[in-house]
Length: 173
Image 1 (spheres, one colour):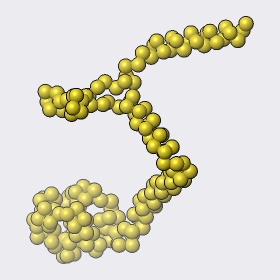
Image 2 (image 1 turned 45 degrees about the horizontal axis):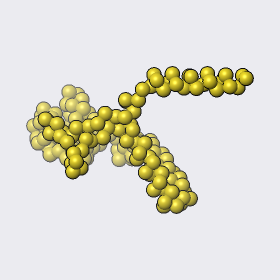
Image 3 (image 1 turned 90 degrees about the vertical axis):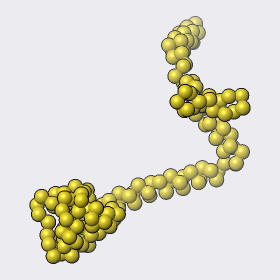
Image 4 (image 1 turned 30 degrees about the horizontal axis):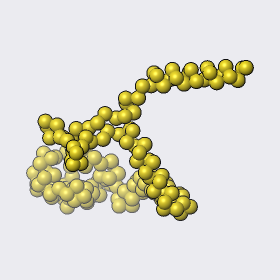
């Protein structure tokens, strides 16, 4: 296991884009120490071993494992990513089926309706008469309050209850 350490340090260092000098600074050793470790001439102290693990965010297998052991340990990560991407691909196929079953005009109409609905829930920039954003004193665009936040929910709820009462009274006649 220890014989794999030097090669793994070199690989992890290169993956992070660090030079031997930069790694030495992070670990708190001389550049020559890093060189000797990578060539298998020297092994880390327990103190520096912890620093290697921290700098590389590495597991013991990533530091001491053989190439096969590292590949096997990363298999679950790879399988999880495959599952994630498989679901995304399935979603794309589903979307393609939906899009193929509708005309371009129907899709455009839905897109327009969604954009209209989105404007109720997302802040919109204030624009001047020329269509340019109005900036505040900090140079950032001023935003209109979200329409949804200004809805009179209490009045809507009261009206809904009144309508339900009227409807119930009509049904009981």
